[in-house]
Image (cartoon, rainbow, N blue to C red; front, side, top):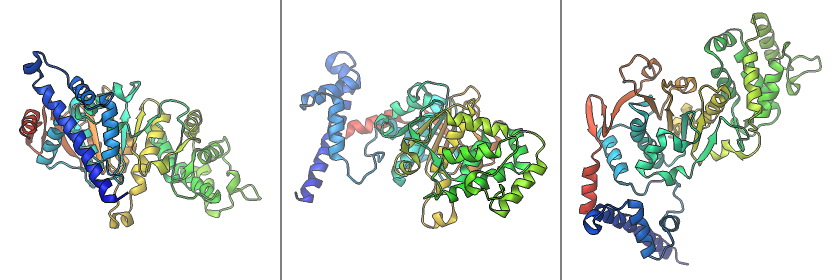
Length: 428
């Protein structure tokens, strides 16, 4: 079949879908005048779909999207925006607010309001750069749909995009994904999930250094194919040996004399044994045991999938094992793309969206330590000048105070002119 015909057919299908959406919106706006009562947009959409021969609006939208989408485009490539999305996006453009290399964009205000520009900015960043990204939600809610973030998603009309993402509830067991990352990121994630005083002790006595170096040595001996392909079984082996009452070298790197077969690692172990004063490493052992219960060794290979598919992670700050997994998965979208050689090739960290619906939310340590480039943070109701957020201020953050119907950024109030956008739509 002629490719020019396929391109023309695809353009025709895309036009049909856009016309369906526009006509349904127009009917909904004048429904009170025509029918004597206001009719929901969903009912108008169903009516138009049935009139065009489809069984439902969902069927029409699915078929037309699949037929009209550029086959080379990513599923999260934005091709149209509803009124709210267009209004919020216009406000972000007017304020010249975008994700960048030097620090996060922090949206302050009630989570349901602050999530609106944050989600819009994250999605537009994915679409513009044509890359995947990650959403991290610190919550006790059962599902994403029960969080303030989903309220913003529905208002923006982006349910279809979030349906394309990988969902991981790091709080549960049997996650059905094979999670891996680099040795450095495993060590970092484990240590950032233990209490601060314990972490400082483990850093001072040399355990953190020994953990990372041993993970690297074992992974190399096992013949990893990629730096980010170190799986949980390697972590379990190393942690079990180093957190024993008398630490010993794991089998893959153990010499005939029972010591490390590497002189440097032998010296690191000896230095740790001389410096340690207690059993703080048992906190790391407990974390590893909790991770074992989540069965993260089999399933979809997340390190590969994350290159071309966004991931949504639900975790709970009060559940340290879920915090470890959130940090590990974050590293696949962040630390994997850090390095001067990558910047020279115009490769940057993937867009990150973090939201906490806790009464007193806090930015997790793994985001603080990352530098938070290309990151949206929804911090909760406290104001940007509140001293409760020194970690954001130290990261060269940009602060936007979100109100209902707009936000304040850089001393300038920008409104979400939704009515104005709707008027422009009617004129077209």
